[in-house]
Length: 264
Figure 1 (spheres, rainbow, N blue to C red):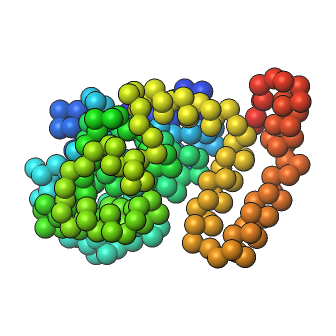
Figure 2: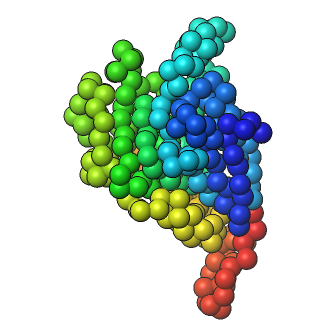
Figure 3: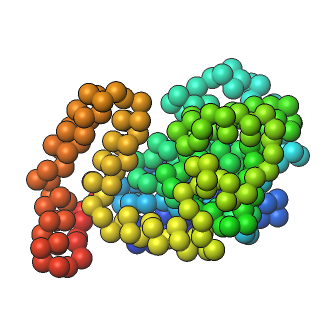
């Protein structure tokens, strides 16, 4: 495990922490690679029921480390460049966001300090985003003569109006957590985002892992489907769950008023 990312586990919940506090968790190539590698490992873990994504030192991520840009650019220029799909439909840089949205279990981002540029896009890969009220955010790529290219364009269109996305992309302006909440980029505000994320993760982990994973898959699948396709997808997902061991355990635990004992 790279020291760029810290992993802790407790009660079927994994916490993934960006770990460059001296650089406000700004992204260098090593942090980018470590995030994708750790996310890819979690995708294989049946015992992990929820993931928390956060940053060490009171900051989520201040975006790309400008000092690391030459190394990142050199990496991006070799082996087919950024057009090469190395992680499913994504390149390495886009996978820093898509690796979280594609995990089978829910991901909750606990965000404070700054979520700029690449950090903002990584945050958007989470299912739920909890931000401190004083968090500052920005789609900052225009400041450097660039466009968002770390998966942000997939996530943003699912969350916010097109005119808001256009304004923020064109201007690179810094905006508040209140604005992020109003525009749909943030799910809720909390004085202690990590504590709130942990509370939600524990609540998720207490539910049937089969149902939670099926729920995430169903939400992702139906996002781009028409009505008929979505209704069929609902039925397929439900048919697979009805009568399964964890579904029956959920029913029995509810009737017997006891904590369920689910199998991963």
